[in-house]
Length: 235
Image (cartoon, rainbow, N blue to C red):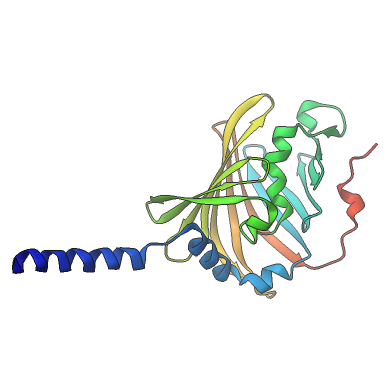
């Protein structure tokens, strides 16, 4: 009987330890938000403009992304002298792709839904208020694996480092030129800006097995005035 009680006590102790150490999706999200600068600092951002250098199979180029939080996001990339543009608002999106010919074209609905989270500097901040949900899907190597589902049911899998709580990578399913594929973004070389936000200075993006590129941050500017007209599709 004593042995039985001792065994129960040990089992209860182990169970209590497991429960204490168990983390929920929100625990991980909150630690991530704290790691990159804190909720108040992230919430104070109204706009962010990032300029990067780009290396790919097509050579060296440059790109600029502009985010007006909750209202518009636009990426402009110079590819061998040709401009590739993607822009979205909280209502829809459009794109210019020289490889497909023509000028600005409305963005397909599925593509827009997959990009809608880029309206925010960090989509995990106040995600529930934006109609999204996050589920913990266990661990993989050094990472927690979180499934983010937007209000439009577009999904992104985030891999958040167990030690730093920075995002190591994310995987998002998209449709490009009629082909479904996984886009994988890997984040490294995290640095803290003068503004107080810590972000990856190197991002490697793989579009399935078709195309890949590496972006390195040159400058990041926060809270400058951005005219919402830049997100409107040219006529």
